[in-house]
Image (cartoon, rainbow over all chains, first blue to last red; front, side, top):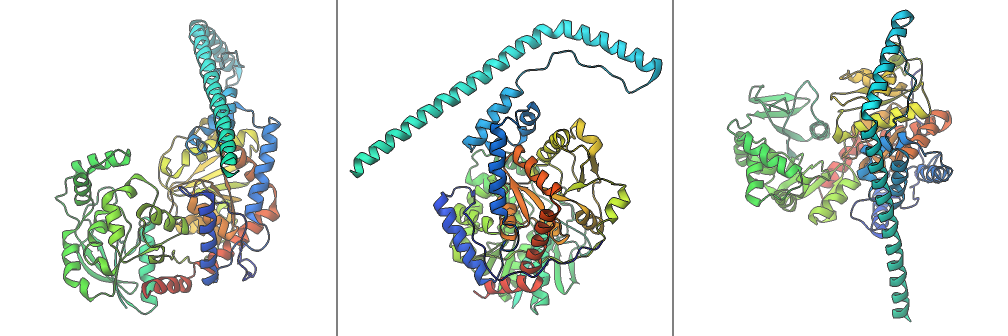
Length: 190
Length: 389
């Protein structure tokens, strides 16, 4: 199969919501900036995102769908918490995403010290022998390390609780300060 | 017009870094537009050693008069690396240490001497990318006719005083994207009218979209990443996300990687990973044409050449929300989506892999955007509109 050029492009210029998360810009500045760029594009006769699917709207739709699924617990999965380790620096500037990450942390906070099914890919007597040997090793390992892992889990649990509590306290504090500012502003305007 | 382009590396036959490729392309575009173009570069081809492995001298390549000069061999590498490490860690660096860093960076006294002697005869001097000693020094020779092609990133080096001084001194700037231009305006307070977004010409190609899967025996859908495999490009994040995606959603989808680098692969992703390392341009384009989605999670790009190539191959893309430039390309073209965290990545992958019509539509829009915006004629128009003011 040979891929050919897409269909004809319209001469219109796309608008859409100001979805720019540009560093250092207020939403108003970003919006003004995007408006200016749209003007530049118009002068350059560049068509923007005008035919078929509107990707800005699609991204928004998917975000709402994800938010709904999150509420339903679809993403309560320790694997997601671990997967976000490289993304944490990007999530830190969003309260919504940080709250999600704290949820992930809660899901994945405990080291799993339960027994698990021990297998070996080799068949026959060799495989069965290795499974028995691994089972003995695991039991010994568990016996000698149980105390350590148990304490580690206690520490992990306490730390997550402490982080969650301070997050909630800050949230409360910020909400009350915002309310106070609003009241003061209303008083000043009046 | 008589133009001089200055870039740290130029290989007549080979491929160098993205920024150098871009500068070469602008130079070739200028030649094809009928201008006299000289390209000043170094004799180095390896960006780790910067050894003078080519002979100095002049040659004509694609109509460009290429002048190669030796890199200074007496630079204090130890001092350079020590200061570079401090800068990289975002720690404060004195003005004099910044100057030591620039002086012991990749510089060429011979190139500078030629420029001082001959520079007067040029109508414009175009230099880049911004963080090389050659650029920092050459930009200061005739700043009143120097245009910077910075390929700027939001990083510690961009915040050095000497970089700011260079930006403020230059006549104008050629950027690759609006977010890059905005970053420069924010960091250096430069006049918005002095900077223009130009970009780079993209050559169209036609390939057999099934050739890659046939060659590598892939009988299930695959997603693709092409480029350096390193933390700076967010490859570890991509590997983690793909492992979780394969575990949670689709056991059959494969991840294909091309490009140099070595990042640890999560154990459970191994059966679903095909890491080819460096491949030819032809094979890369075939891989792009056959991929269901092109993934580019990097947040540190000033243009995104591979993204545009993926669109030319008709493949939709998925990028990181913090990758301002790549997201900007997606917003302008309508050829891709952007995720903030894993749940969005999963939902977007589900859509792009599960909805063939959406997949085709985004790929088609991306391709249309590149064919319209990054033709050689369009680039020449934007470049000379800028240079002629």
